[in-house]
Length: 274
Image 1 (cartoon, helix red, strand yellow):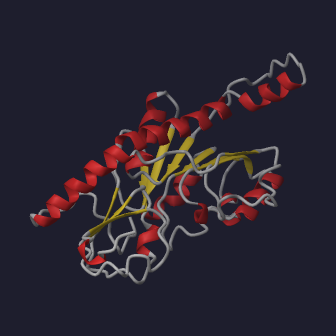
Image 2 (cartoon, rainbow, N blue to C red):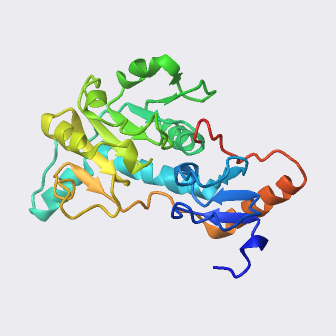
């Protein structure tokens, strides 16, 4: 809150209510305090000439990649089966302790690429997919090669930004393209997934399991069938958090560059929405 909104030239925001910035008539820069910017770009009250930037934080990528590795390794080593066996005091030595995994990272921007690189360096087969071609240390696909990408994997890690094109992307129609039961890890946005389709795919065997950090509605309603599903693991949107100190430095740097007429490396494209 401020008594002098005309003095505000830069806004640091995260999931602000629509129209919340209209009182700041002299705004020059908007900075999203997370990797996502859909909450800013979907607000029609924000003038399109105001540049929008986002945090690009190495610590955020570190946290996100560690979360993805946790989910992947727990699946790979059958950890949840051993947890259940321990609760039953069952000395269970499963025949296949290590699942053979072939990982596909859907969305290889800053966060997805970091995760894919770390999966690659651990020795797991990993491929990536993005809208446009990327130079990577692992095989990557783009454009109309999506079905080639999806047909090779049995673990899908989703890190795509939310845009109109990715809305509802993780749906039953997509799951039917898998060549074998596939494990889903979603750390992108809740609106990218269709939860009733995830439940259906789990029940029909198209998905072997799901590790979800984001949901269509947050907090996840207590009535959601995801809570009690035996093949689902849930965390409350904590895969990666913004570190205020680092993000503050980035805001100051961006604003100084704006004042000097220099390019803003963290500026997002309104057309692409990332």
